[in-house]
Length: 474
Ligand code: 5AD
Ligand code: SF4
Image (tube, rainbow, N blue to C red; front, side, top):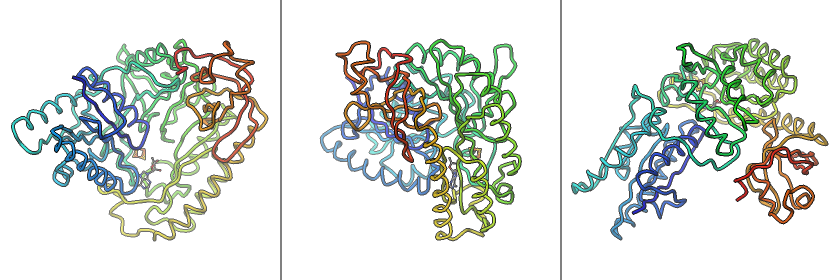
């Protein structure tokens, strides 16, 4: 009998990737995906610990699920609740105590053991215990990548591939080194094999993922290790892969070979997310970022020297403990000098267990709010300018999803801008089969002329089809 699993994913792309792998682990055990908790035999919350009050949000979601579980039990149906991801890793035992409705808590390194955990939970229930509990948040020696089944069906022409996990940097504000563990890189051959399967499944764009992706140092078959620059060159050789991206990078790990990959590899997209967090040397030191503001500028100069059109993106934290007005002004100054195409910015918030959370000198909330507002106004201004520069130009866009308007598909420019393309007009002229619907273009790489530029997206008209995708036209 087929069973149903509902997965709710929070946070980063790594979690999206992990959720897919969990589903693939369950498929051989008779599970199908459903998009409502009501229908599910198993609900998995794949959680994220980065945002503020992350744990509280998970607990309130569990509260809602508990009701669903009780309603189902009243009609004689079983439902299991599993909490995965970084909140599970961080809260583990505490969560088992505080939320009795939860059957399983599993950390990001133990997803391949999900079927065993389910079997164990089911056995405990069959034994007549009212609640069955399994906790698995170890960092096992054998890696989940050796065990998780391969991804087989790719939903989009743009897909993610995890190449590295964990982080050894220990920025003072960040939970990742504690929740995801030490830095681990997958062997080159495994990644290339996965990328080839993706290409065979119709994937055109691959984003290489890792918490600290440019710290990548994967094993080669000859026992030596290779860096991210090498890996990008290898992935670029795969037939069918036209675009390569990678995220998230640390400024300290931008090796020369990786910088040169931006110059030498046409598939390597001209976009780089290189978080700096702050523009003040004092704060960078307090954050344990391991580089100065000048070193960051030098890095940006080197990148722009080899790739003048490189679009840059960053993360910022305002109101880190001890941040003065002067420190904050230094951040604004850095932003003015670099001019990002796009960026994310956050108010600092203390994460239990991190060194910064114990610093007494916290910045008042209203000061953080005001700083965030000013920073975002500046970042938005630059983003708008960057978008406007593309007006009237032609760009390659990989169409990935349907838009809100009829006849509209949305894709990404090389610079990761969202581009909305109206295909109703172009359909008759450019489609190989004029009678096919506009969704026929889904998954295709097309040439687009930019006719409108907003703060968050562009509008474009189709001028040509570079690569027609087959198999994604659903
Ligand atoms: N407070 C605020 N922002 C944080 N980030 C990570 N930890 C914290 C925190 N404690 C932000 C950083 C990071 C991004 C993913 O989330 O900017 O780069
Ligand atoms: Fe967290 Fe990134 Fe710093 Fe690692 S490098 S500790 S993941 S912010």
